[in-house]
Length: 390
Image (cartoon, rainbow, N blue to C red; front, side, top):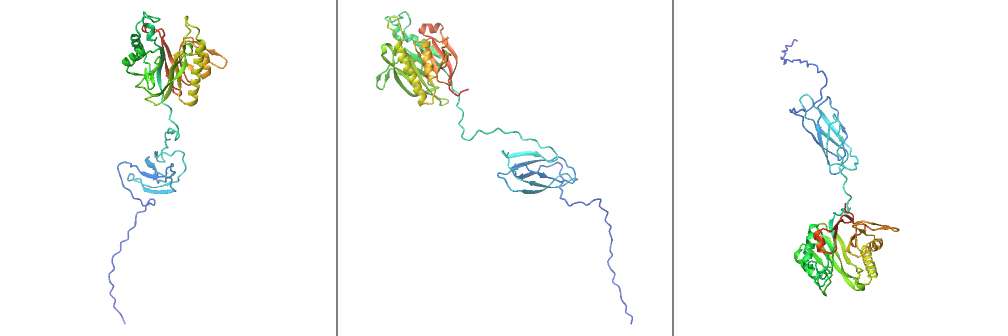
């Protein structure tokens, strides 16, 4: 038997033939921007080893690498490069931490297509706990026998000279003119001391005419510019004078206000051999021995430098034994060894000495018209620097 079948129409099918692709194209995400951007990649503190495999050359790209605060294990960072519409790539950075002696917190390196610049060396820091070098102290130290007030009275040895109260005002002018900071004064008798305190307010003086235990001897004193130096400790020691009679002479510690550094200062006057008196040589020798022993004791017990000023009434007879016993140097020069002593030629009987390491320069003997009518001794002074100063 025959069956009649009616065919249902089928939808039309179009066959599309794709144009052949010249080469396989990987799938990329590309965002076109008009300029080359900067990528910021966080890596380990050591310089990273970068592996980049771009499919095509691309312009040099600078990247800023900021070191992490602590080393990390191998880190793989994948970023999508943003470039022009015709070139894109996926960059993989593999950072392997390596030890470095002095890592830099932030460094800027070029992409692999450009050479890597060498970082500038950084100065080595000072070792932790190292003491700071001392601040330099430069000052003018002087010695001046001002000729005591009693010498120029009507009954004195120089009655035609101006009174001591007038001459000490001239002495103040000399101290100011030569910018003296610390001075050892000899024969500063009471009227002169009072005039000095009244007219030279920038100076402090030790000792004064009165102390806690009564009247004191001011003939041998030390004056200092109190805006730069502060008194820390002061006392007097007995030194043989004429015929072995002792005089109290000052020894004190001053602190330099700007730097805090300290130094000992001592001032002496040894007896002279005068035509109308018996020789005072034995008493000068005893005084020298006591002064040298004082300096040795100060060197043993303290780290501060020591300065000695004074009218010693001797030239080589004082310089050679004193420097050999103490190791001190004279502002006027000279050399002393264990076998030979050469005193300075310029020095007379007034002296300035300093501890080993103290440096002197510009030693000056002031003998102008004002100095000659002020005293029968010159004002001597020198620039001094403490040990360790450059």
